[in-house]
Amino acid sequence: MNKIVVREIPEKILIIKPSSLGDIVHSLPFLQVIRNSFPSAEIHWVVAKGFEGLLKDHPMINKLLIIKKDQWRKPANIGKTIVEVRRFFRETRKESYDVAIDLQGLLRSGLIIYATKAPIRVGFEDAREGGDLFYTHKVKTGKEMHAVNKYLEIASAMGLKVGRVEFPMPLIGDASKKPRLKGGDRKYIVVVPGARWRTKRWSAEKFGALISMLETETIIVGAGSDTKMSEEIKAKSNGNALSMAGKTDIKELILIIRNAEYVICNDSGPMHIAAALNIPVIAIFGPTNPLRTGPYGSNHVIIRRDIDCAPCYKKTCKDIKCMEDISVETVYKAIAQKGFAGQAGVTLRA
Picture 1: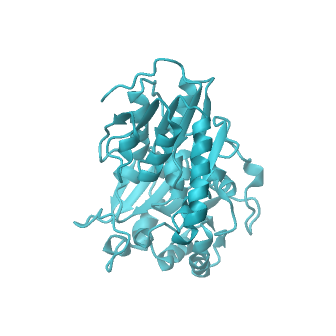
Picture 2: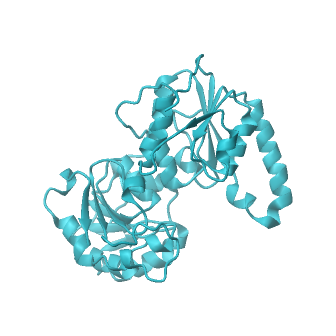
C-alpha cells in the first residue's frame, strides 16, 4: 500500500460519501478515526438529499454539504442542475480544504473532489466511471473486503491509527420513548422487509408467516414505498405486528432499532444501522455477498442459499431461487436456536 504523507496537521477535511444509507453507516468508523487523529480539524461531509438525517447534528461533523443527486440525474432538470452544480463547486472550492477523501468512488464524487482543489485528494484505485482520475493519491484494497474495512484502509494509508472499530451514532432518544405496542411497554423485534433491489427481498407472505410464529411483538419498518408490502405482512402476521413503514424519518428509525431485541431483515440500510448499534441481526441474503455487504461484527446470523449462481449482484432476475428457496422454517430455526446473541457470524445454508 502506498503511504499518504500528511506533513502538516490539516485544519479542514472533506469526506465525500453521499449515499446510500448502509454505505454512510459503513463510513462512520472512518469518521471516528479521522476525528481521533485530528481533534482540532474542521470536518465537512458531502451527503445526498434524503440521507442527511443520519449525519445532522453529529458531534464529529462541523458542516454538511447536501447535494440533490437524484434531481441532478433527471434530463428535464439539466438547466437548473448546471446552475446548482456550478454554485456547489464554487462554494466547495472556497472552503480551502487541506485534505479531501472520496469514499464513494464514482465520476460524480470524483468531480466533487477535483473541484475542491485540495492539495491532498484521496480515493480508491478501483474507483468506477473514471473517478480515480481526479485523485492525487490512490489506495488499493481487496475486492472481497467488507466495506467498513475498505474505508479504514484509506485511514491506514494516511498513517492514522486504526484501533477498535467504532460506529459513532449519537443518541437521539432513550428507552422511555420506544413505541408502545398493544401490550404496553413491552419488548419488541424489528422486521425490515424492504431492499433497494427487488432481487434482495424475501416475500411478504413469508415474512408474515414468520412473524405469526413469534412470541415477541414486531414492528415493521421501511420507506414509504414499502407501505403496501408492510401492510400485507401485517395482515398475515396473526395480529402480531405494527406497521411503521413510511411513518418514520431516519432518526426515528434509528431510535426504533436501538431499542429492539433483534432485527430480521434483507440486505438493506437498516440492517447496517442495527449492526452498528450492536443489535443482533438475522439477515436473509440472496444475490449479494455478505463478505462485502453483510452486517459488520459478530452478533449476527446470515441465512443464504448455497447455489452456483449466487452471488450474482443482479437487480432483476426471472427466477430468484436464492431468495425464494429460503423457507420460513429455516429462518425460524435461526431465531429459535439457543445462544443466538453469542453466535459469531454464523451462516446458515438454507
